[in-house]
Length: 261
Image 1: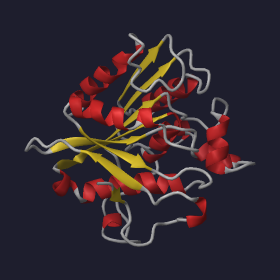
Image 2: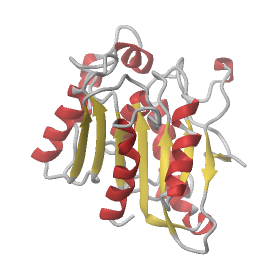
Image 3: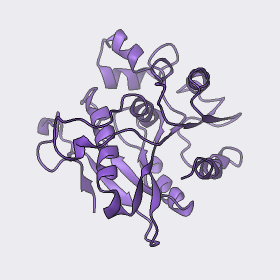
């Protein structure tokens, strides 16, 4: 059963766009323990959500001893801040219902691919610690405890994926807003630790996105782990057919354990 993020009125909802209201699809461990959890944001250029970057990733996390959700966030013709609103609400929702889902409310990570990686990047920088505007769920923190960025569109500047940028911001985009929503420019002193991976051959989203983000994280003294694989095209997901790149999944599970997930 999917969980609807808002019981009543969903912000920015427009029925004319032909998309359902945003939901979370659960992949929860039933082991009698209080588990850590990762919310997965599939990629798709902000025009869709790639299936191979959703359920298979959640099941990989389950195999690694981590509960998971897949966020069915809204895409174009919706524009910013709709997608970010969905992402931050998802974190609040999972934290609010942590006991129900048998998860630790202080062990909530987010993981995104490509444009979903941009959404995750924004969410590790634009969160709040609870607001009085809205319902009881809005009163809890939307700060994730970890971020995982997989061949992510981190920058909306020189090295961006133009399709994702235009779908998110419209054409022509507001360049001041684009700069604010470029991850390398907006890391906070209290941003969570980050795991990044990319391939050097990526032609759609240049590897500089992850490299520049890692430099910016270092400058802010935010813990991170970065893996650049030499070969592989964009959009590999689990990369099961690439002996080198598929190492990212066990490397991630090891990192999650290292930070206490």
